[in-house]
Length: 194
Figure 1 (tube, one colour):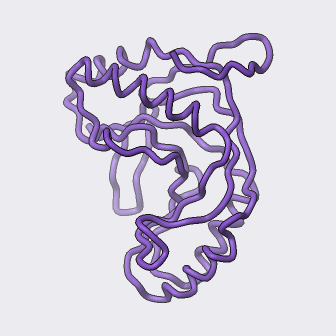
Figure 2 (spheres, one colour):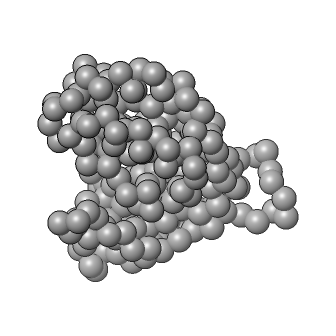
């Protein structure tokens, strides 16, 4: 089955507004459904059914405090001259996401499970994928106008193993396993992944 480890992102007004702005550029882009927007920590790709328990075991030792992710700015991969992926950036929470990802990656590799994206990690939210260069200049203008837009923030309280089923209408994500943040009876400044 097709798996990834990620973090759910709530649907808040500014994010929905940004999706609408991107849609209204007329660019040939496949937007991510608001309820499917997430932060991908590791994309595992196809994993045999008999290895899913190993993935859960790799995740089960993860310990982290709740932390805040602050979203800011619109951008594109690989660059603005030939955008393929449209994303929202983040200015707070990156360090904690990298620590969590690093822990999970090490645990997966110890179990001989090799994620497809083990090399690079730039924390972001993918909100759309460019299908062709039609009306691309409108999209590039919109990104330039919103390069520093404040989008909002949310609290990360769990890390989830998702099963991704591809359908003609878009992917369907099912939660298979979840690791909750340590409950310390209040927010903690020591946001560390062990």
